[in-house]
Structures are given as C-alpha cells and as structure tokens.
Image (tube, rainbow, N blue to C red):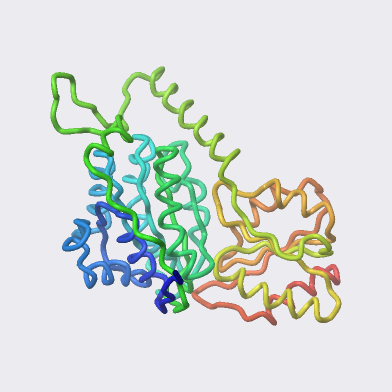
Length: 362
C-alpha cells in the first residue's frame, strides 16, 4: 500500500510525528520560528485521540521542568523552542542529563546573540554540542536538512534517548522549520501501557511504594566520591554513543580534490555549488554531519587525506569548523570558513566564490 505524501512545514512535521510516535506529553512555549510546533499540536488535539498531553507552559523554564517531571516517570515527553528559549532551559536540560532521563528537545535556531533576529541561523552549535548547561555532559544532537528528516528524527531522537537514558536534541535551523516540502509521515506507534513503562523503565519514579522505597530521581549527590562515580558512568555512556551512533552523509567524496563540510539547510545549498563546480571540472565533495554530537571525526579525517583543502560552511561566525580542525590530522591542511550571520542565507554562487579562494590559496 502506497504511503500518503503530504505538504507541510518542518515545524508541522515535528508535531505530526510526535503524535504518531505516541508521545505522552509536550510542554512548550511559543517563540518564532518554531511556534507552529505548538500551534499544530493544539489544532490536532491529540488528547482526544492518543491521550497525549499538550500544554503551553507559562515560560520556557516551566516547560523544561515539566519535561523533567514527566521524564522521571518514564513517559515519552518533549519540548520545543528557539535559541533564546533554549538558553532559558539550560539548567533543566543539565538536570535531565545528570538524572539520566530520556527526553526530546527541539531547537529551531534563530540568529543571536541576545534576542537577535527571528530569521534562521546555526549559531547554537556550540551550545548544543558542548552540552549548553553546567557540568560535564552531552546531548545526542541530530541536525535535519529536510522536512522529511524533521519528521523522521522525532522517532530517532526518542529511541536514542531511551536507549542511552539521556536527552536528545533536534537542532534545526529556521529554514528547515519554516520551509514547506513533501513528507511521508511515519507509521503510528501505540502509546506504551503503564505495564510496558514499568518493564522498560524500572528506574522511573512511580509515586507509590508498593511495599518498597519508591524510586528517587535526582541530579543531586552531596558525596563527592559518589558524584565522581556518577560522572564516570555518564562518560562511559558518552563513549558508547560515540562508538555506535555517529551518522553522516557523504557526497562525491571518492574522487574529491576539495571538500565542503556543512550541516542542516546550508548543506543543501552547498550541493548546488558542488554541482556547478563539477560541471566546470572541479572535483568537490561534501560531508554532511547528521549527528553533530557524536561528531563524524573519523569520516572527515579519512576524507581529508585525499583533498587539497576544506571549506566549512555555516550560518554563523565559525563554530563547527573547530570540530573539523580537530578531525583533520594534517596540520598543513587548508581549512577555511564561510558563513553568513543575522539571518542571511547565502546562495550557491557565494559558496563557489569562497571555494575559489581556497583553490587560489587566498
């Protein structure tokens, strides 16, 4: 049976995919350019069909702490926001990580710093891939480049979060959140029963003793030796994720003489620049990180052995380029950055011009 193809925004795809995944609760607050996530959920009224709780909290701080509470009971819960709102959530995100709780956080990035602009950006890369809040922790960070991936990454984000008991983030730029494309929505999953939650999440707080001490979910540990053991356990989990969950796409890297590294919507624009370059006989390839953490260091390191230069393209002042530099073994490799800020999205010819500068050693 053929699947239905629908036309919708990336933000709308997030909402529909959440309902189909069987999410138990969404807690959020409107902020451009991601407000359609909440608006779509309110319009679809999933509380009447799947029992999903949809609540507009009084603030981003309130919404992330509602996620914290829901996640502590083993429920599949999520929130979404944009850059300044995600900044307000950082303490709660750190609590989720320290309490080893699965949850999904969606950040549809806008330009900053500060209130900045409502237009698209990728300037939250550092915040997302370095944890963002206080303490030694990571989030699993997925970077969609299409509306289809916005839908697909809801299930992937939740599945990884529950597999490793850690929060996941979909880090989308405003272009992907606002643009409309054809999308095939995932098949619906039934919401888990209370019995299934109890079996799958034995660590979850139950709210009753049942003849034993109830589970306590907390990020607090006053004993330094025990806190160090907690951190050692976290780090071992992160090493496991780094071994097993790196995702990326490579285009024309087998014969490439020059390499572009880009993520999200800007990677699609880079593909057009690569197509134009190859028509002129210049062999250019692309690596698109899908997981920004864990980052595809090995793939970039291997590709860099066969190229003359690397161009990192981002909608920011230069953030992912630091990870690209860490990946490249040759200290003499030419690695350059091209980025636009303030919500300006470059066209392929600008990327081609930046690539030409590497080729001419400028």
